Image 1: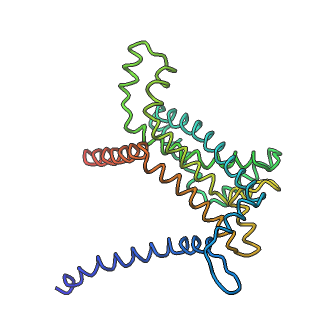
Image 2: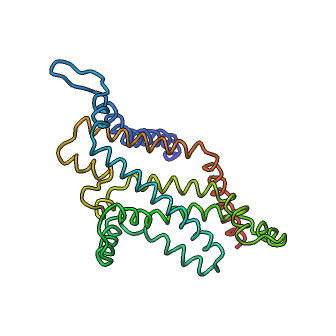
Image 3: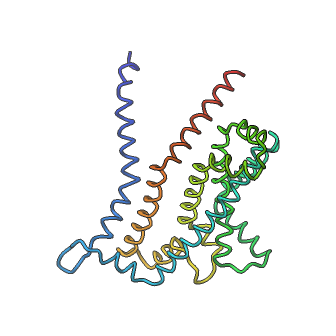
Length: 280
């Protein structure tokens, strides 16, 4: 009886914990936004866009933003093409080979990021590559590939091979099958993988910090360097802009039909796994 009386208290505790987690997550962001609009004078505090204007007037920050966009676009484009091709190739391989390749593709997700960064740095030294934006792009491609492959592979789970067989029976070549059947069906996953890899590349700090060259900082690295001199409203404004850019891309992804298709594929894949377990 005592336990039955205590059961109704659980939902209240869960709600309190939920609001506490949300507060811990979003209160610092709210403080950052407010600080980026506040201008303190000697006698009063007012709202102003001064710090945002200073961010856009800072040529070093704008160069870092350009570097971040360049790296993110190049890395996500390469990772999307290579990752999609790898996912399609894995799907056509035997079950044992596919399991092996899937395990190897997840190594970048399992390893600590600092270990991955040091491994890439050592490899660049062995290859005698000069550190710069090229090495940053290569590094970002390596850790983005796994995310693209997972996204595309989740779409391939629901792919019906009979479409390919029917196309072959009608005399279609492998290139025609890829162009007219496989790629259109994979479009939602390809777009999702591209956006995910773009966000990961744009926001990455640790790996970029290890493999970038002198005077070629990306925006996260530039922000970290500036914070060593102290946190200022200007840095709050810069962080707010980075957050808004990331949020805009996420909103675009969530509102796109591609995202809903991926959710359906994930649900279908989970249902298939449950059915297989029940049959076993």
